[in-house]
Length: 200
Image (cartoon, rainbow, N blue to C red; front, side, top):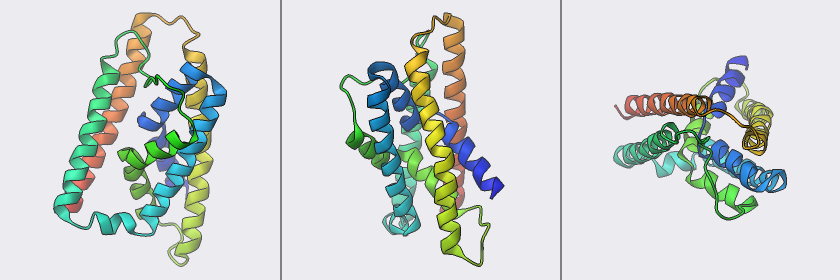
């Protein structure tokens, strides 16, 4: 159970479309809009988890070629995101939004967010700690996932609300961007290596 909780923490804290857009919305539109958006991300992630657990994703991705192609596209998208973050210069690389996103925007993002599928697949297909009661294990996994997921996303929202008010030097903001990009690249690399192993 502890290993699962630690895996949740490290998989979610790494920058991805969900947390970066949460911080960007917090910076651009404030806490109220951010709370609505995070609520959408929450329910979207819950639905993605149910798609994984019920095996619907496995049915859709049962073909090796399709699974590999989607994995490459998802990895490519996340690497592109890491590139954008690393080369954002002296501006904190939160994803910006021109229009005020809300609840439904958060749900939609999770459905197209490759990290949401990768994280949920890794968490729900591994870390068995109740082999005699699979259903109870799933319930505990959903509880533990959200006990970590919710505070971390609220912290990213608060970071967006407060970060833009600070006067950070260019080297500091570049360092933050590079650290986020490296974290995301590590996650993408591990995910792709896992995909290659599964397809063999």
